[in-house]
Image (cartoon, rainbow, N blue to C red; front, top):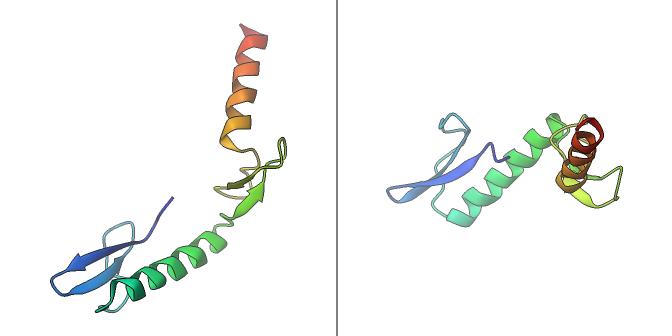
Length: 88
């Protein structure tokens, strides 16, 4: 989930947070603004422990939403379907 984004304003680029607030300086170069956005996003993800993790079921790498999220979407959907079959 992206919390930061780059937006062009006149002749400059800004890094904005999820609320649309400017969180850094004005950049004249879009690539520099994108690098700053990526740096901020990575720091934010690390604080929330949102990192690339191996799925506990199939071992595929996926972007976890936090330490509580240990199954990839495919395995989670499969587990939910199995649960419905068992109770249905």
